[in-house]
Length: 441
Image 1 (tube, rainbow, N blue to C red):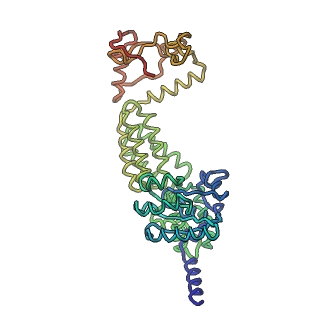
Image 2 (cartoon, rainbow, N blue to C red):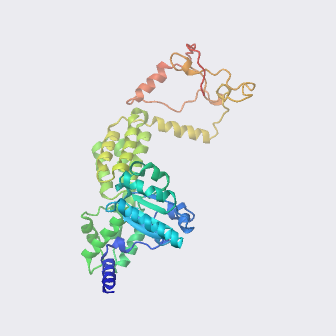
Image 3 (cartoon, rainbow, N blue to C red):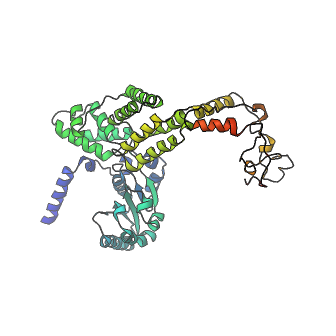
């Protein structure tokens, strides 16, 4: 009896001393912050939980996005028994014990069991295989959580028996809700500037945001949490970056790359990163810039920008600052041309203004019964049947014949494109077919 009393007292004390993030973990999915694409009204995970029809799932996402929180909230929203293991400390023996209890519970009471396995990617193949029979026959409903790509870290048989749900970094609005709950739980108040700084520097990580808030509250006690406390908790200084600064700095960033000034471009990149700007937003702007301002003058620029975006997702900050900086320097020093951007802008403008026309008969689809009777495809010349791989023929509607929207410059590699268009493919130079080939489409 005394052991039970001591255990209860110890559990109560641990609960009071637990980190703020642990104390604020919701009891049901209605209390979960963020992940609206999974938990919003009518969304898939909510519907499965509310109907108690949840099958095995894998929760995949960056740290602090709520994988453990979501699993525990599911536990509070289901009639099934809930058991929890961590792949860091558990082994095959622990898994088999959970399976045995689940079978006994199902046989005696008809009650199912949910096993939440945190850090499932830490389990080796043999350990993951030990789960398979119980997951396959429904003895266990598995909820696995991982920060790693499950296509690489979870065995295919186990993965194929589970539904994959991707959790996204928390938005600023979701983090703001967490901050308000945290401030209330700590029994204090906080200056809006302090809360904004913590939200901006958390990188969508709810646990990190609450931990920083808790440290700031301890530093401020018994005062309200101020900006200086948030700076001290984060070991950083707040960079002034309001709504106007956001647009102004981004504008300066783009114009510096357009002006081929790598030093200025890297400086504005640094300003944005230090201010807590969403790095994905920066990467998106760079990807747009690569096609809008560089285009065919350096086709490699788009690949570099996309690679930087992918590296950011794969590596994350702070290391991904290296990938972003390399890409910014490449974009800033690349030759510039907006010819391909102007081409689509002007073409769409003309189409919207009524520059329409019928598809020429020789370009129409001829691969269906009756098409030849209509004359579709008649006279079409297959470019690959010509030695040059090109043949002069009309591709625009009759009403627009001769119109041009793409005007290549002599900048960078676009010079080669311009040369081919001017000299290598004269519009009046028809060539006779060298091979008997037909359009394979």
